[in-house]
Length: 208
Image: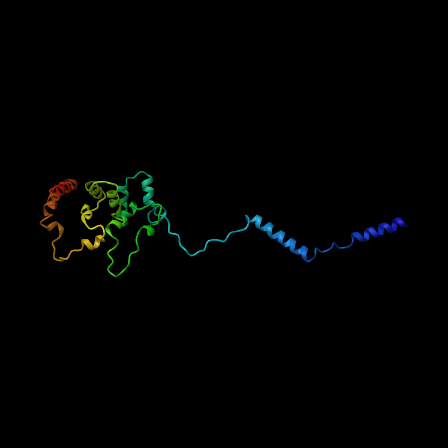
């Protein structure tokens, strides 16, 4: 009988529900679950950067110009690439800028209206590299030759570097003849008509 009573008590204890964790136990379990989820997601997440600021692509990654940098990688000379840009009605002087920076960061914003003639000549993106050559000690003749190779007017270097080029190339005489009819330059255009190469004509202009 004693043995039967002991077995009855033991079976009654096994049928009792497990004790609830209580309020403190529930909080601890929730905290443990949260930590587990954070560990699965790679730890505590930092604040994400603020959206809204559009990052301009580097020139070499810009969809408008990336194909020209691919041409360079294929071994095409810079002159051929610039010619391709001109055919596509793109500004070929873009290839003279830093390809790892965006175009907008290297070109000053243009103010519409107000008669703004642009930046000073020595800060103009088209010509500033020639002024850097002068700072490096290259003679003016070598810099002008470089401009000719790039298809630029070497006489630009004779202008005031602290004024915009557009303001210095404006003509006060609207009735001036076309350049090829100007007595100063007409003979050079005659040379071209006679079949002389452009290089020979430019050398004649330099001699004069």
